[in-house]
Image 1 (cartoon, helix red, strand yellow):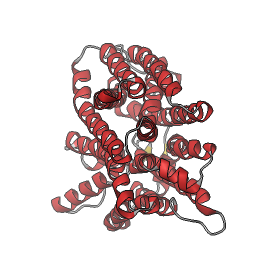
Image 2 (cartoon, rainbow, N blue to C red):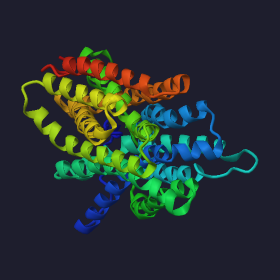
Image 3 (cartoon, helix red, strand yellow):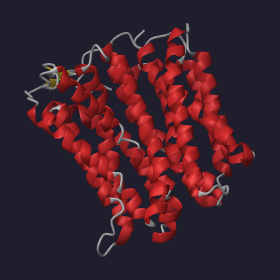
Length: 408
């Protein structure tokens, strides 16, 4: 989603007067991406310890795993008008500052109210900040690196996956070293704060003139193809963020120790990176994408269910299947933006529709898993849920994969 696609006049490139400065900008943008998923996977890695120490009620566990994903959709539409008002660079800097503050607040023991209020407020702040970053970063990459879109897009996508893998893999070992879940969560504010300091000079130097928006072009909200692509995105988001939020607790409930569970989740997310590298290229070579969309959806849903029901001796296989399927599914869902549109303006608006609806409704996945577990005391109903979600994603993916375009 390009937050500045409707801006008139068009925004100027970020002030980078030399090749070295442009490389520095690219490094900053990639490092920002490297901070955008630790919020989800780090909390999941020590959820059992937080719940035991704080005495979190069931509703709070559900809220803490669902709220940040919901806020990705809620705040996404606000990014374009705010970017036109303040400039994309300064808004991105502000979002990263809020993310850092949220990460610092999240494990705090607030005087008089304890950990719960701080956990809720910090998590909400992180979700809102990440929503703005999700919208702003792709547009900046497109505007400032027009001749390196493949390289920068690949680095950015890899950074997002690596962010989730780092949060899943290192949070529990940090807890073991320090003996405190608060210290393990506070750690992730450090890299976010470093990026704020690195990006600060670039954002402050950037000049920003007065802009207004235009609404010319195809209305994606009236297109059946756009809704099919968006439905595909919703269903993949339901599985994707449920992996970040619940896979580690699922493994620990099955008897896997915290450190090994973190490694398994990290390995699964690394395989997501592999799937995200190869699936879009394959999808782009095909006449239509019906077969690949349906296949990767069933892989993800089946891998999720097998991680719950399958023999524990083969848990690396099940989570590996989940990782490859989920990474490919997310990548081809995003690839549909380019393959189902004829121009950049329509693509940007379809991306906005997918993010707003996809993340907003897709957060129902983490909510349902939490509610089902709270009601039954087991993750088995979640396994059945994601068999159904994977099957529905295959149906929507098959429809979205037909060789048709938004707007005819």
